Amino acid sequence: YIKIKKFSKALEYAERAYTLNKDDVIIISNLSLALSYNDKCEEGLIIIEQIKDTNRYLYFRTKLLINRIQNNYDDIFTLADNIINDHYLDYDVYNIKLEAFIKLSLIDEAISLMNEMSSKFIISPSDYNNFGFALMECYYYNDAIPFFNKALEINPYIVQSWQNLQVCYAQISEFDLALQTCNKALNYFPNDKKTLGNKGSILINQGKITEGFGVFIQLLPDSIDFSDRKLPIRDFIIEIFNKHGINLDNLDALEQIWNKGDEQEKMKIKESFSLINNYFNSLQNNIFNIIKGDSTL
Image (cartoon, rainbow, N blue to C red):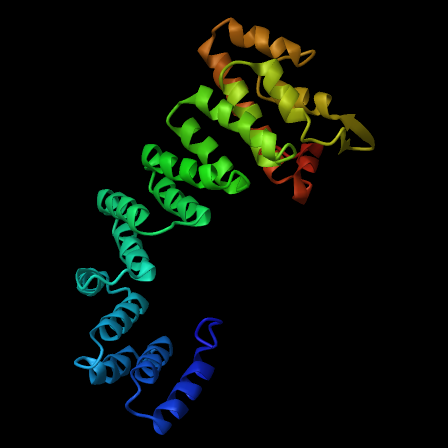
C-alpha cells in the first residue's frame, strides 16, 4: 500500500499487524513508515527506537526514509553513512544520499557518489539517464554527458538519452557533436520529432539555413489554414520572416542573407526561427492559426 501511495490503508494494516506481533522488526519498521507517510513522523521516529539495539541496519534505514519524507537532508547524510560504513550495499540508501546532494546543489559530491555507485552496483541505463538529467537540470552539461553516453552504451534504444545528449552538446556550443548525436539517434529513431527538430535548429544556428529548414519542414504539415484558404507551409514561414523584417521571396534567399554577415539580420533570422520552433512544439494545439491576425507575430 505504501508503494502505491495508499498511505491510510498502509497504516491500517500496519497497526493491525503490530497488535498481533509487537516484536517483529519488519512490522515495527513498516508501522513507523506508515505513520510517517500519514504526517505522523514524530510518532514514527518514536516507534522505530524499539529496534535500535535489535537490528541496526533496519533501524538506520527506516530513520533514513523518515528523514527523506521530512526533507531533513542533514540527518540523511549521517544515517546513510552509518549504513554504508557498516558495509551494507543498499542501492536505495546510496540513491537517497545522491538525491540529497542534488537537492542541496552539492554537485561535485553528487558526481563523486554517482561514480562510486557505478563501481559498486550494476546501474541500469534508465538510472544513468536520470543521473545525467539531474546534472543537466543544474546546468552541469559537461558532467551530464558521460552519464548519457553510459546509458546509450548499454542500451541505444533510450530516446530520452539521445535527446538529452543533443541538448547538452548544444548548450556547451559543441554543435558538431550535437549534430553527430542527432544523426546517430535518427539511426535508431528515424521519425523522432524532437531529434529532427534539434537537428534543424542546430543546422540553422550554424548558418546552414537551407539544409536546416529542409529538415525542419519535414515535421510540419503541408499547409496551414489561413483565413479562407490553405497557405502552403513555405509561404507561411516566409510570412513570419517578413513580419520580422526579413524580406523574402523564397526560403533559399535566407542563406544568402546569413552569409552576408550582418549581425542584426542574423539576429532577426534566429528570432524568427525561434518563433517557428515554438509553434512547432505546440503544434498539437493548432496555434499556427495565430497568424490569422494575432499581433504577436
